[in-house]
Length: 241
Length: 286
Image (tube, rainbow over all chains, first blue to last red; front, side, top):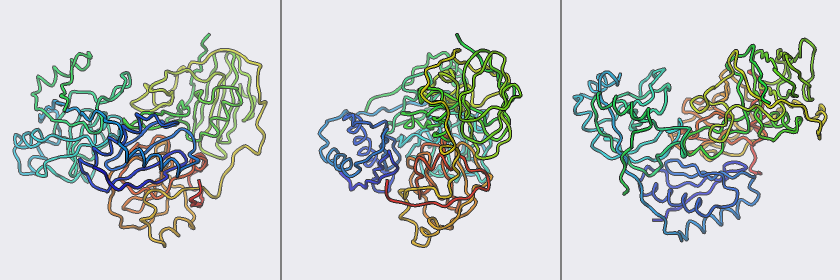
């Protein structure tokens, strides 16, 4: 599926490509496929391609002195889509412990939403989420697909310290804090996994386009997984789809 | 042989920086690197170092360092007073250092960020292809008292530059070149004029992640979908704040991006003190 794209010069060394402004899986798929084309083609002096919900930023390591030529070449690449690229993505199973001890906001959140804790867990773990992009913090995944029954505006006064691994809801989004951070989202669970590790290549195993399903685990299992993660023995489950 | 620089006095603002981390923004890793890349590179050129050799970046408060062995250093960036064992030393030239020498940096006169370059650069661990300090990426995120920073001991005589004279030194610019950002066209003609013609002031709210300007620009923009941002991007928030993103900024943002500072302008604005003023020179020519 092809879209009408806008090409803008972002800076001396970067070009921004924008799709229509929507959160849409078809846009995401097209965006990521284009990104792969660009990376595969190993266009001279491209350092990296950064993605957003509906845009790509191509970063070069030298000043672009032929912007229009570059855009023409990029447009041709988009139109041709000559490479039948592997469009498999991964569906990850992410364990989360929805316990009052580990999730400081869970009780109040459930009460505010007029849901039982079990209902919160069911709603949060049933749907499959899509990773739209990565940003805000190293390893922070922007997830789309939260059940609208779980929407809750972020806290008026953010918490000064949301703990690493906190699974939270803010507005119409949900996500996992990859490290301790101030934050305004409501913490409803805790995840024993690490999302970013400077000592591994790549430092983050998740990619935009991947999908995630949360699975509820009890405190004992949470602690068990934590030890395994600490000893580098935990194998994150994923299926290729 | 490895020498050690012992940190005798420091503060939160002193870090190790190089040109920054490239290639990891897609995982949400900020670019980091020296706030004033120009002054940083000058320190390395003076010492005939690799351009990317790591330097100490310091700001706002005094810094005192003790050297364990022979080397050469150079001081660039913010105008400060520096003393080696109580003898005044000059900025922008190579300084010989021997065992036990103590370097004191104090009295910020002009500018904000200064650099201590050292022969062959500081040798702290490279993480994700850079030595730049960043919380949660590198073990240390600022210099602490009693830290010992490694360097390669030696004196070298094969130099191309002896010192850098005044014209290249500290340059407090009145106008900063900026390109229209992706959302510049959302601004009304009147708002665009305000951006191009007004004086802007550096607020107290400044750090390595962002510089907030005092002046506000009233707007009723809808929020936009989160998209990529770079150091130098100027965001406009719903409450009217203008935020100039700097080296440690996040890699994505949801506020309209109205301007993108030129690379040179990012270095100039880094050196503007609280209360400093400037105008944007908005231009489409790259």
